[in-house]
Length: 206
Image 1 (tube, one colour):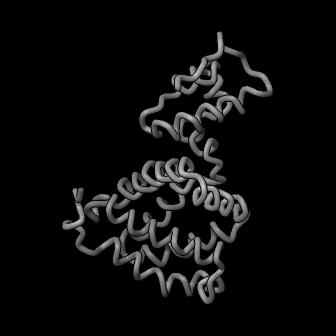
Image 2 (spheres, helix red, strand yellow):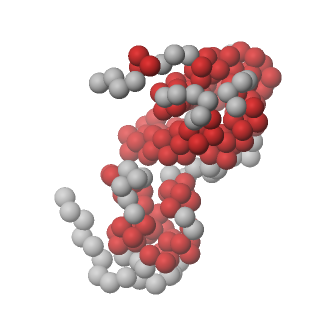
Image 3 (cartoon, rainbow, N blue to C red):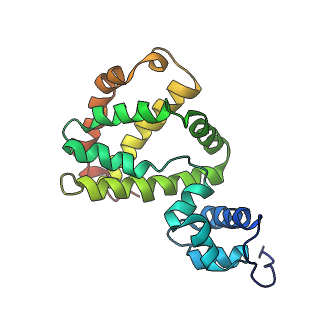
C-alpha cells in the first residue's frame, strides 16, 4: 500500500531528527542501503535534504543511527587487518571482539542482537550493515591478499555471530568465561582458516 506523503517540507524542529530516522528505517528495511538516496529519505520524511546532513552528516552515519548500532565496526576491522594482513588475523579479531563486546556498549549491542533474532526487518538491515561496512572494509584492506572476500567474510561472520549468542546470550560455559587470549588461541585459527582455505567451489552457487 502506498504511503500518504505529508504536504510540504518542514524545517528543523524537535521532531525532525526522529522523523528522519523513522523514514530511513522504513526505506533501508524495504529497499536496502545501496538503493536509497539521501534525497529519497528527505522526501519520505518531508524535510529539506540539508537537514539530514545537519543532523547526521553522511549516509553511513544515518544508517548506523537508524539501526541503533552504537559503534561503526568498519574502523575496528580495518585496524585489525592492517596490523599484519592475513597472517594471525583471527587472533587479533578475537582480541578486538572481546574489547568491543565487554566494553561500554555491551548492553546496546546485546539489544541489537536480540532484536535481530526476533524481527525479520532488523535481520535484513543487519545483513546490509555486514555487507556494506564489514565486507567492503575487508575487501579494501586485504582484498589484494585473498580472493572471494564476500564468501570468506560470511563464514567469519557466522563464527562471530555464533560466538556472540553462545557467550553473551546463552552464556554457555566455558565459552562465556574465556578471556581474550583464550579466545584468540581457540577461535582465532578457525578464522585464519576461513581467510586462507580454497573457496572457489563455493562461488556463484544458486
